[in-house]
Amino acid sequence: MKHAHTYITKADGEREVFNPAKLEHSLQLAGASSTARARVLAHVMSELSDGMMTEDIYRHAFEVLRKEASTPIAARYSVKRAVFSLGPSGFPFEQFFAEVLRAHGWRSRSNVTLRGRCASHEVDVLAEKGGKRVGIEAKFHNDPGGKTDIKDALYVFARYEDLKRAPTESSRVEEGWLVTNTRFTKNAIRYAQCSGMTLIGWDYPASHGLMALIQQGRVHPLTCLTTLSDGEKRRLLENKIVLCKSVTTRHLLDEYGVKPDRIPKVLEEAQQLCGI
Image (cartoon, rainbow, N blue to C red; front, side, top):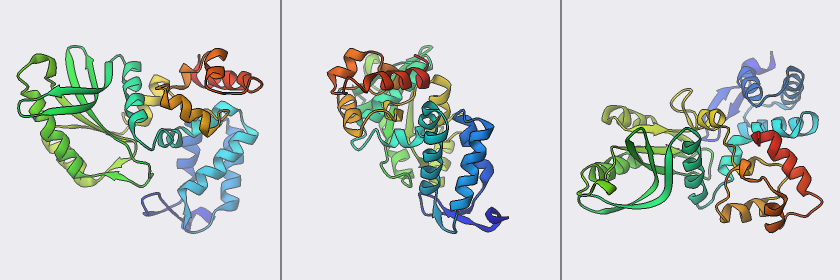
């Protein structure tokens, strides 16, 4: 069979044997029907070549879904790329992760300054739930192959040890988390496991990573919407509108420059994708 010996190149440069089951699983998670999945797989297999980038496989799959399946399925399938599109500054990612936590019952704020025992610290996200107070460092990568390394884990551990011993209760936290939109190096994971620090990556820990939190909380980023242009998305993000479900009214879209004749399609996609 063609895929049995065809190697593909991942974003970080690593090569692995193409596994159609992984692609089908991601399509199934997006809600694609068995017919749509079969069409995507047939198209990808016809284009597959040794050394093909995973990004190219995604692009082929997305185009088939957009043409042959419903728009919300294509948008759901594109959620990982949509999170990358929150960049390049990283600030929208912090706001987006605060929203993800809210969807899971946390009270959260982004960009908070806390005074530790030895120094003041800018905390990307401060979250509280069930009496627990957590400070979170959000490490955003524009490059899908970028990994968060042990130096970031060491930095986060040290600053939150300082905040754990803050002289005032209002600045004190119980835990420090490190969150990224990509993956962690083995060294970072080893250190976090040893030191008891929580890491959240795109698919780490298994079944409890960022992708799972997004899907379980139904908090798709605004950048999932295929009916908005890049410029329109950027204007909304700059005004701290980061969720698909925040796009609820004609007035809001009109305010940010979406042409009147396109607004109904945007609202329809937002409603179908986000269950508004």
